[in-house]
Length: 436
Image 1: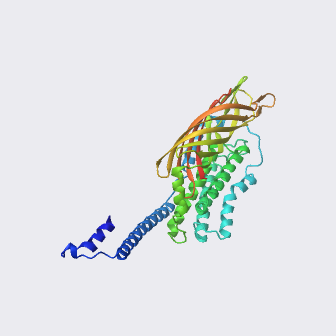
Image 2: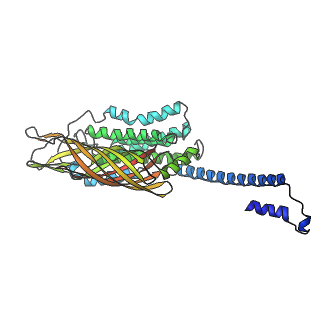
Image 3: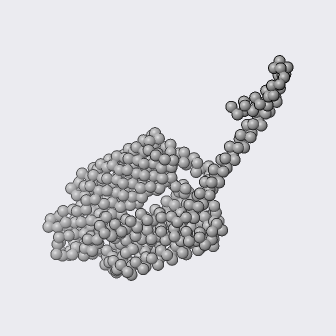
């Protein structure tokens, strides 16, 4: 319409002469004028797009340099479990020691993300921060994390499951592991979601090792994770205040970011990693006593394939390590572990309620496998046998597309297992998803 109006003004105004005296307009000239107008409109569109991209990059930089409260959920979980599991934690059952309190192998696993961070830096891979800025942030993160952990250890005096000392709360290995993973994510997460997920998967592995080695309770792990993440975020925030925009590689909108956004709002098929807590029925009745369990640390992965933009089929897998103790006896029994394995196939209805955010509901069915354990006081023994039972479940999930190539969110699932014990269980987890 604008082009027609322009041609009308140029070619038919003024109309002071007789219409009959106007000679036919040269078609080549008309095409040339039309081409000039088209080029002008194209340049205007490019200018607007460039302004949008610059505004987006400026917003991302501002967000990147602001304080992130990502670790707050870990704190909340740790505090809640300190309250709800207090009776379980203080019960006198003792777990068998597996190595010393430090267990340097666990520290080695916890430090893998930090080692990977500096290996990438040494190899010349572009990071978020230049060397001086990275050194400052990393040293500050580890210093705050270590100082906070040690202060709480020597203030709270919580006994370890194996009763080796009174420095269980919070977990120093876990705080170091999550600080390392957060550093790696802050510096190199923009390259690939596998870098971020690799770091936090290693940190989750550290949690499982500390539980398996009978060195910590669940609340210790979540508090340690919160300290690690929040200390690192605080360190980067303070470093950014000190250095300003000096020595920071500014984020840039890329073509793949736009494609990823469109894919997320169309058919977000992908692989989701899960880390959280499994709670619910905790009592197992045995002759003359009860075996009670604490909250379990849970990890797993889901594969989702979207048939349409809103309907998907899913494969869900979970493993949970459950600490257990014998109650109602005068003698003190050893503590034990029950390992739960969930394998389910389900369907999901997912709705993109805003650009980059989805809320979903799902139903699933499958089996739960239990790997049991033995509890003894030296004379009497209770045994929880292995079993495999059919189960049904349902849940809700929330996902938000992150600037670091993945979608983060949370899941809340309910499991009903057709078993004689721990029939009804709930899983509350954080999630990280990589799109196919």
